[in-house]
Image (tube, rainbow, N blue to C red; front, side, top):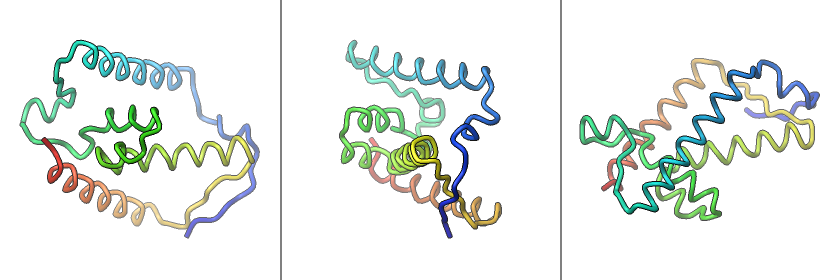
Length: 135
């Protein structure tokens, strides 16, 4: 299902544009600024627009808090807050380390349709978890 493929390390950067780098940088910076500012001020913020408008948590709710908990090294809290976001961040980190550090790329044999079905299933499973364990 998944195999390791030897590849050049510089191929990791194919398709990476300055706009993409700036977009990721500004997104991460703004999320961290909002999170830490509201932590400092003690205001309970619901940064998720879907949660603010409907009162229902989305599948990715608590993802920012899970990311910060993972960054602090608290894997248990991160998994408890949002397992899908935490798992995705860990898999992305592993994928990046394998590719840039060792020159190996993970290659999947899943078709696009199978990958989409798996993703939607995991998203629905995560959403049910978030709704059952939410505030």
